[in-house]
Image (cartoon, rainbow, N blue to C red; front, side, top):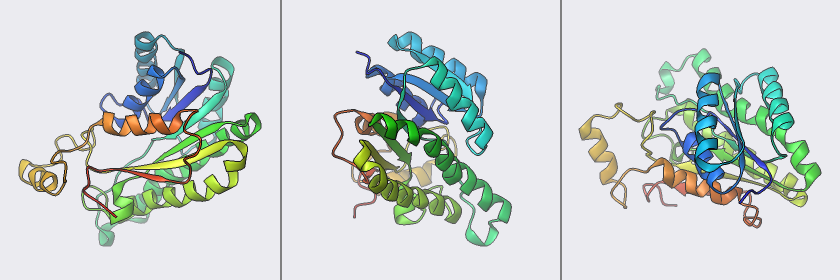
Length: 252
């Protein structure tokens, strides 16, 4: 059943990524879908595949979320071809395992621009329409690294950027709550994606999983299910919250 609204997911073209699976889940729940990704061809292919599978309208657009011009052009294209935007999932991001003493100014700025500035630009573009229509769902993709201070792939720059998203979401939730817009964050732990594939030797992977109470790594489904829940029109009394998806590896 169509919800009559469009969900935008940034950075969602990767086949094994959280964003791609989130787009699939949202389409299954009846959302029209816009995939924005720096790889425009992959975004279009992902949207076409999801549209065919779920019988929804879906479009893919090239968009560098750090570029105000790209964000404006992508949103304008979405608004002319799809139903009104009702949800934004700020999934686009990059990791950085570099230790603090080795972090260059360039790396620090790159991590902040993609993870934080990109989420700011997309949210700023989406928010006026959501407020005007009296409905909106925004979800930030943070990380357990923001809460516990790294520990897997995230060094200082990544942890700081993902922590910034938590403060962003909480403050914005206070501002836009009266207008029917919710803003929440998810903080995944060790998830099987292209980011982790092949980057953990068996010994380190075994040590990490041994510290997870549910005794396994997470899947993209584990994260996408929670994001889809937060985007539902019926999830209207949850805002400013951080949803931990880590199998109990960080309990606080």
